[in-house]
Length: 468
Image (cartoon, rainbow, N blue to C red):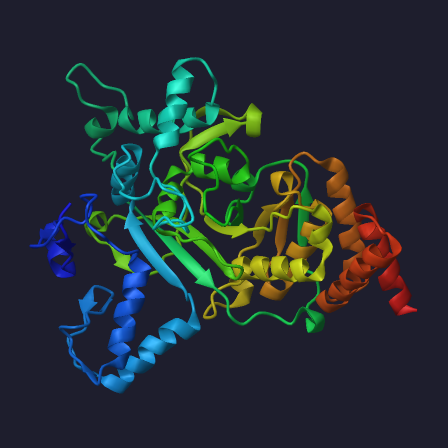
């Protein structure tokens, strides 16, 4: 595939890439270094330069090229700042048509160098994107070996291809009614990084309002809320493999989310990914690729389902008309479950949840929607849902959001969390007080043999004694 140059103005007007002269990049014989190594090398060279012209560095923002001369000391400061600040907030907006094209390429496994997952592979810090395992799963389904999750993507595809009935003249219902079957939405993927984190020992916030239930689903009953994806640090987890738990199901019923795996690098401890989708009547939406723009509209669901994991089953198409924004945050997956009570790991989970729940700095917190969440980091990750519930409530309190908590048919858990919440809320317990009681519990686990099942009773005891 030859090198191509994307001129934004030309692309917006003609929707074509202009192919330039150059050597093939993916012929298997060229010695191409990983992109980040090349970028760092070039930035270091620029930082050493006394002066830099616009022909040597092209910077794009909002589709407009900067055509001004940069002073050498300014460029050096920028290059150094790029290494010191680490990842900041970045967003990519694509039309649904563009995403359909990218997913079609993924289905036919056309993305180069994305099948290798070894530690030395160029994309070792990215999820897989090509559907090679999905195609193998489809083969097994034809042989009657199950793999129900794959049928969800297959049925989504068939539903979109055959949308509307066909009359005797070969026209579909939607076409006869003058309506386009082409989706007109925009999907925004925002990677967010929080560098300034709360001092949990001194947080004076009280716990937020809580709605908790053992019935319902986040995606169905959390309408209008910030919905939590219990993510892997490689977003999407096993959606293109054999995974069929919360995150994989979410990506299957919202298949446009899968394209995030193409460009989302492994999440760091203070990173999260926000995904939103909106409908747009602007025809230009089909041909504009935006970087640095964030739109908050809604995330689109295409499928209905029942069950979970081995019992998962696709039950039909879904027409989504509900506002939605999804936040992907990854919990720790520890070999020894006891380690989750270690305060180092508790702080990590508090910071991760806060990163996901934190709202826009320029938005009034009174306008923030509630968080729709549940047993984050539990199940296959081995987390204690009673601990994770407290952690998420503490993070939501600091982020100034209310919480809707779904325990997924676990009635006993619902009642345990509710009783604990009522104790903390009526006692006007602050986040700092709760944090210090967790510290005390970890000390007692290490020295006095306290067990995870003692968590709530110990916290209650510590807080009651501190008041006397």
